[in-house]
Length: 102
Image 1: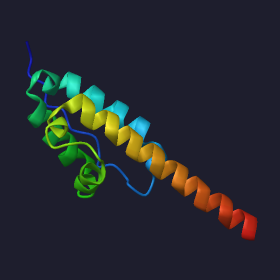
Image 2: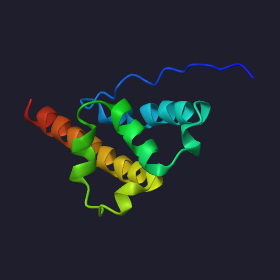
Image 3: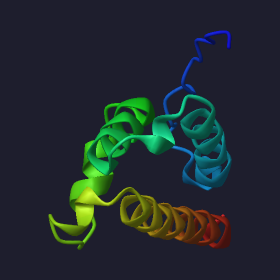
Image 4: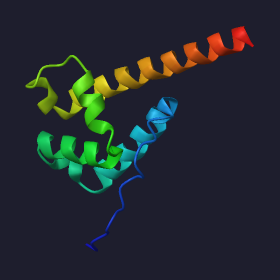
């Protein structure tokens, strides 16, 4: 079987939280195609954070999950989704209040 070198997705743009679903889907494709999904959870989490970019640690530390739970890839992804959903709602709220005052 030929060895294929895959490039990870570009870092996530934290100024665009509504792009999270699309970015995560791209990362999941990379995760499976690169066989990262068969690695231990800590390696998957570290790769996720690395691929997301410099602000990714802030997302993980801002969630209320325990250190033990942060060692499970599925839990980190689920909580990241919650973080970005809140961020998206917050930015929509700011946008709506800006439009009301205009």
